[in-house]
Length: 630
Image (cartoon, rainbow, N blue to C red; front, top):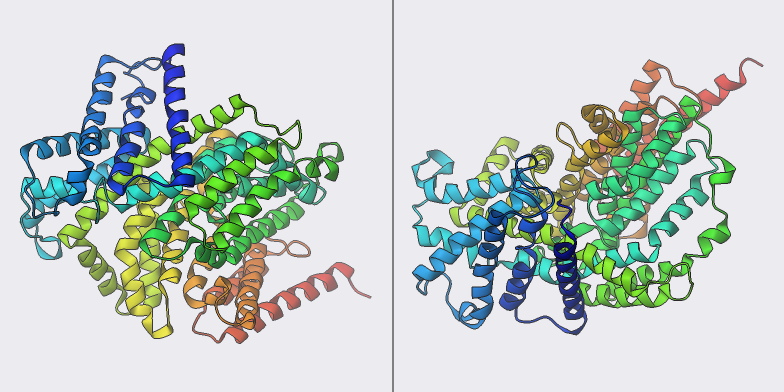
């Protein structure tokens, strides 16, 4: 991102902060009509991207926008200004029936071209390429053979589908509506959390809880990064924010650079899995699956705890094997230091309560944001000044702008796949490859989501994969009672894990840059520390008790299976349980854990008994060896 000159930086800052504040106001007092709100959101956040991000890293001016950038800026504003001015007519027109005029045609083309360029500059070139391919496919699909063949589309049909179908998809579809309303207000809440010093509360809490134990620095990194992730919703930004502090400390205490990078990236990725925020994709899930967000965070709670439990187990076993000591007592904050910021937890509790009570997400985030400002004034050390509030709104705007265009791009992809029937065709291909096996379908879909996540961010990846895969999961899973929330959480988990999974793992690569280690090694370590994401993802389908579904006994059984399996798996790859494990023992212990986690055809009580029995046997054997002959 450019470091703009003073006057322009101030202007852009005030612009982003003002409109973030307007979004917060709308969250509490009501939004304009959908088309108007989407137009406002896009017109205020798309054009500044051409001033903030250079066209090329080397050839373009890095400290000021060029004349061409200003032309892009103006061009990006025109289509959305026209929609805002004509919002009533746009809302009343019958899609694909009323004439798509030459003016609309020209504006639609300008909108799509500027959108692609904004995504390329500010988000991810891979996503821009995917959007462009989907638009091109609508033009040329009728020339392709077999399942790829589509009916011919005219140019107006393609532009209308990609741009102006507010009820179905495209730039002005419901996905943009979600970002402009609920997600925007939650981003502001996260920025207020950071500005109030909640990050210090998280760091101190993590150090006070885990710093006195073996591998304390890594455990503190896991806890603090997971808590930070609930604020940022972005694994990469979380790695950059917390990893710059945690990775060097882990390396100084004895962790190898690649391992330290893997721990940090796995923990940062998990932030998007942890309620109550869970990143933008969870809000999209609530909208497209018609599931209350409160139900989603309840269903995801145990899975998120299991994810971080597994990382902590792995870190502990690794530390014991390497002999890494606890943190220096001088670096561990006293509990009174933690309690000095404890009042900042109230807004988080408030937002959880409001969501569980089924208040709308945007209103819950609005109330929690105001509560965060008010609560911060209880102590001088956390008090938010007007400058802090302005900076928080600016940071929220800087986060919302790239997200706005990435979600609009995902809307174009979904619209193209739906209009051409490719959603059905691609889903049919996966279904045919699975041969009617739900387990194989899930494996193929998980791989598909991970591959998608290599080139595009989590939320667009989830949206596209959900459109393709969820109907297939529900069809093959109807015999075991799979419900929509289970299928969506499965896809969501693997969309998140893609940031920590080689060969292209964005979070791991960012952590590798900090640790100066191999990106591929950092990705491999991140994937092994994030192993619970893979087991929990499949458990959503086969062990729905972890979603607090059904009787309490079912929840206990499903959670127990995961706990025992994850302890065995992490002990196996770390090579330590009570004492070091030999090569053969590591293979046996790890394989037993994998069998307990994934042998879903075996009765649940049997899996739990095997997991508990294996842990008991290994524990007793190692203790006996440690005592030696009598």
